[in-house]
Image (cartoon, rainbow, N blue to C red; front, side, top):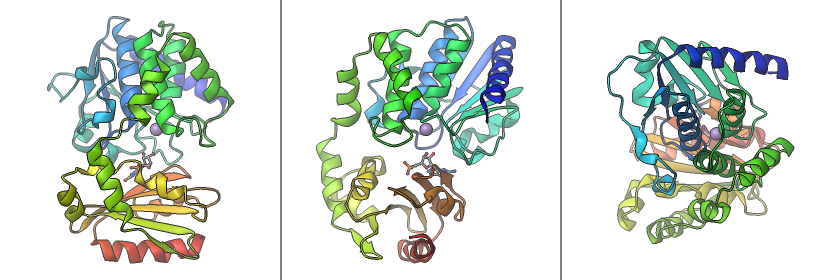
Amino acid sequence: MNINELDSKFNLAIEAIKDAKSIYIVSHVQPDGDNIGSLLALGLALKKIEKDVFFLKTDNIPKDFLFLPNIDLIKDYDEKEIDLLITLDSSDEERLGGNIELLEKAKKIVNIDHHLSNTNYGDINIVDSQAAATCEIVFKLIKKLEIPIDKDIATCLFTGISTDTGSFMYENANEETHLIAAELLRIGIDKQEININIWQNKSLLKTKLFIKTLETLETYFDDRVAIVEVTRDNLRAVGASMEDSEGIVSFIRDIDTVEVAVMLKEFEEDEIKVSMRSKRYVDVSDLCSKFGGGGHQKASGCTIKSDLEQVKKDLITELEKVI
Ligand code: 5GP
Ligand code: MN
């Protein structure tokens, strides 16, 4: 989407916001920092212009993000009328989990996202794959609405941008990302506290799962592909939950020879959630879309209804074609 197109989409969204009284903003399944950050930031901003804002919970909020201001506002749907539903960071309808039915109930839908694979399921779709995070798009929307960005809003936006860029390390963190971050810093956020909360706050339990999971490491194709498994047995053995596996896949991507890192999460015996990361040239979004998933070129996922061994076999067959 070019700048003019993007601008006209912003104007349509602003019109829809101005026309609406009750605005529901919805998170996605297994929400990440960008999702929770953009949800809170946009909701807090819209409250300032006297809208009835509802922050919709789709899934459990990982404890890493419980430090965010006003996190308690995120709640289950209250069965009331929805003038406007805003989806964030959700590339397709399925990402909305149990809240998918709200797409039917809402009078209007604004879909704000930065995934190239977004299916444009909204009435108004602000999809900018150049943005490093949905929080960047929300930052621009709040500015266009001329709502002042306070410290709480800035904290949420900075968190989303930091988590989606690997603390500004990945190539998606471009000049504009840094300029936005600079503006958020100027507002007076406590960068050190945010960084400690999102990057230096691993529980001992999470660390134990990390160790256990690394023991499952297998490599293929001259160590260019690395695969780890988070099995239900291992979760039970350390007393951890699946959300504690977050971060392991990027750790194995950091192995020098590795181009593609894969983490297989055994949710059920025959339901495996795949997390994939690449380093230089493999488009893992393309690969995951073959299994009904998607995401970004270098960070994607999908869910496959087979057992661990079968999933591994099928993925290796596809990986061999691209590695
Ligand atoms: P993660 O591996 O951290 O769960 O997800 C990495 C990226 O892939 C995120 O940008 C996320 O939106 C996307 N992603 C993960 N799982 C799925 C999926 O099942 N479908 C789609 N469309 N995207 C996914
Ligand atoms: Mn995102």
